[in-house]
Image (cartoon, rainbow, N blue to C red):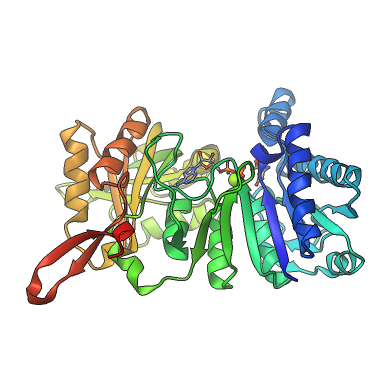
Length: 427
Ligand code: ADP
Ligand code: ASP
Ligand code: MG
């Protein structure tokens, strides 16, 4: 008998029929003799609707009150799913994050989980119940409800899978697994059988919303076995696993687009040591995640423009922080741009293959796509481009790296010759 944590996202619990479908699937797993802990998101677009509701009464709602409001979305789903399971004759009990023993830091809207104390879940499982836990929420040290950032139910699921030593943490979705890119943008995208934690982490951090990046990072650090599969079809999904040697043979595994980005530029900052540190410390203190940073020193070498990207949702807060810093560093002011997107290619094979950046840039240039910023890591290359060209750029790169075809494996043959073979043909 195994223990599974199964997470169902918003699309999988969007309406009563979907919830009944989820209930049947969960019940089937239980009837096979397994223990099941289910984590659910809010129904459909409930979280977006709650955010819109709050904005109707206050354009800048207080973060604590937002968390009180947003947590109700998941609380609704757990109760309804428990009722649907009862209707099938199953023993099931719903729990909020705090009832499930999920404790988090006192940071509203994007708290990190600090501790999981799943005693109550364990006793309910022992008593033969299916346990249904509200994702995306925890209790902070002041006994306030905090939420875990957008997509945070994934984090709840992974943290519970770890705390309960589950055999597997399964994510049931409206897609059948992890694809080479978002199949909504590129219908020819291919599903992968497996992907390494590192590649999944980069894709998720770079905008592939299929899994929350924090959840993948936690899973990697604690070796939690993840599986992404369809909540509507019975098909094998994608396993997210530790890296194995042959994975390096695929140079580009996937393409991700993040259209929820914004760029801030601080103009003509004196080029003195410590200035950049001061600006980015102030942003870090405000819990703003800065991603790409570009420093353009002028020809005279005394003044620099500093540009950086932040999630669009953090833009207002970032501008507030920078507005305080600008007079302190005697810069000439700031500008911002919300019409930008970040496009990334990811693959652990990049570690050992060169020329990938050049190929990416020329493919985009050939189609007249201007690059505003570039950044790289060992296994990723990202560019910032106008949002209007984001989908086109994804399609261009997907084609350029032939991701619509079975993965090609680059084999270093004896004598220094390189052979290219398809993995589907057993290479
Ligand atoms: P859930 O609500 O279950 O958490 P999400 O909506 O967050 O699910 O994630 C699933 C969506 O992620 C899919 O509908 C798909 O359009 C999108 N997506 C983006 N990139 C990828 C990818 N590389 N593979 C699969 N799905 C992707
Ligand atoms: N309901 C939350 C969101 O929409 C959390 C989640 O679905 O994971 O972001
Ligand atoms: Mg999600």
